[in-house]
Length: 175
Image 1 (cartoon, rainbow, N blue to C red):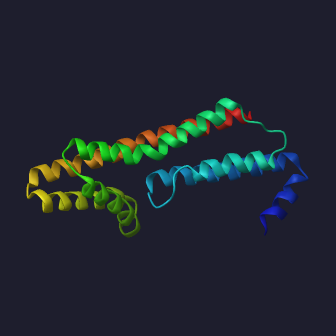
Image 2 (cartoon, rainbow, N blue to C red):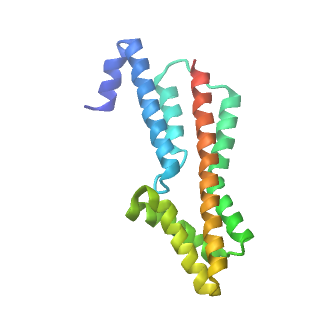
């Protein structure tokens, strides 16, 4: 069934339309949470899709300027949080741009080939191998790989908290 037909069907009954919209928003929010843990899915697109979908379909809804400003700023922070945290910890531990590149490649291919745990295992292995290949120092290479994984987990927790904050704020805005 076509989405437009479904919306028209639900629009005849306002309560059904509201339930349909909330279900769609919740589905998009769940996908957004999954995107935080799966680097192959883009961050924040599903959140923005949900709030724009709700605004377009629901007549008379106006988000406050504070919500728009906050959502944009938090989205920008989320966008940079993962990369900056990893780059910071890798640089702090003595890594270089090759190590950062290895971490990113490890997250992407690890998730594709190893599933959910691949975004931790593959970057760890690639960072360790990259650093060991460059320095021949197992201890420093291991320390750098562990630091990168801790940075990734920290940035993931921060991104998750920011996304949940935005989702709660959205529901406060609409009710």
